[in-house]
Length: 189
Length: 194
Picture 1: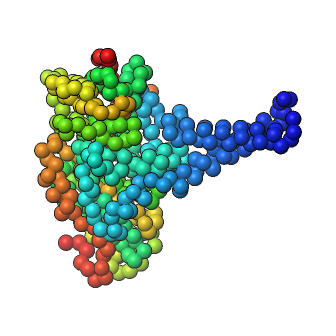
Picture 2 (picture 1 turned 45 degrees about the horizontal axis):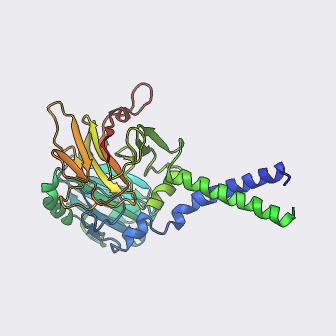
């Protein structure tokens, strides 16, 4: 067979295009990405404490067995969402994700330096529009996080200071809340 | 050779090269996306809003939600310091000095990312519960059989991997731009093998 350099160069070019399409397409077509796995576990705008990671049950692969997790999948299409939690340990970490899994905002217990925190999640467009949200910006006690899109996910991670802390850490996570801000609701307390 | 055979051969070549290179760079990483230190590797833009498409694809395919690398680092190893694959047939030690971080933890997983079932219900050691020497150094033994000290069971799994997660890494970079924590990573040594 006579090698045609032109044909080889052309195949490599096509290979490059296939490579790029595959890499860019994987996040969209990955059937078991984190978002798909977690949406089946939690309704929108509700805080769910995930079952503790064990060989029998892991909500996501490679979760930390010595950490406890809570998630809130939010939908801001009908207005901002509020998250309230105590931060009993400076190791706690609150991470915000868009549906593709990008961690667009993170705050750790060490940064908060307070025993409890109120976080308001809103989009650029509904952040400043109504009176209610204007009040939020002035509130010193709450932190406003701007979500790049209506849908997203908050994950609270609570590393254990030892396995004997598991129960009390899970209880602390269960006391956290996540929900839509109802019109006329008091925001800062 | 008929044109149609040539066309098929060249398109086949394009598909194979395109897909296998994409798979490799998404699954294993490359210099663009991962850095290596001994047996440990880390995707250094994991979770970042400015992450490249390979990093995004890697974590989407794995189904993980990493915290951005300024807050947490995830090092994985599926080989020992000699470069041999970690297997439950052998025993290993993971030895190191305390890492400069608020919290770190070492856990073993099957290749699939699942935890390894064991009767001791022991899946990880963190800086809060690991037994350490007076100089702060620690030693974990990975073995299918119970061991004294920090024993991390590898029962019932042939190949496995270790993950070291570091929350609130304090040391940033030294003068040469090297992440200082890379120099503090524990050593993974095979101690006996039938």
